[in-house]
Length: 212
Image 1 (cartoon, rainbow, N blue to C red):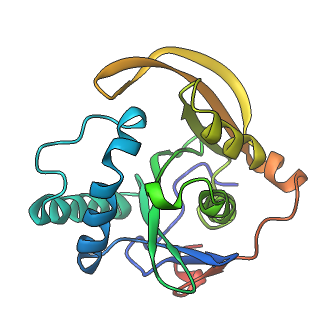
Image 2: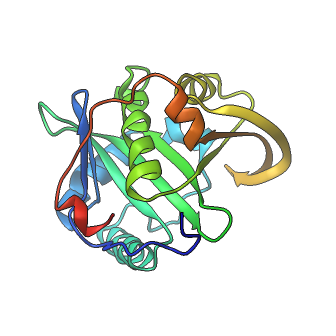
Image 3: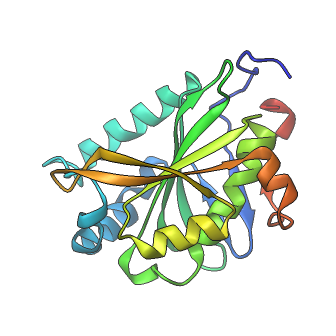
């Protein structure tokens, strides 16, 4: 396998779908649903996220966010998705693949958030199952990393169910809710995924040859 970044068209409409949910890149038309869900979920998300900027839920802030997402996709640095329920198109949460490293690393960092009214219902577990073959097969990566606060038991269960293995403990690793906090470090390797249970059936919108 080449250790250079593969030729990937980053701006095609990527849609990953399976098990009653789908992931796609956000667009400006998502602003109201996104801002409503984030606003409703603010207290629920506060212990697990960095402090939000003052203009985080504004339309201008969302537009800047989309520009940054598009730039990072073009540069091969990250992919940011929103998570929807297939049957109703309800927005459920979001998932991000950030800090894509090529060369001898071929790795990425996984992050995610859920709306308060949809948490604990298995939707994010399905999303993580969808994103794994996208990382390993479409993007050609070898390693997905995730960091979890030690007391976030639901997130830890989700990751371990998806085949992530605890690898270490990082002191004051991330600035969460205004405080430097310790995190458990986990990872799932391509060979771990291949040796595990069959991944969820996945369809990808757009021409798959465009980004393989």
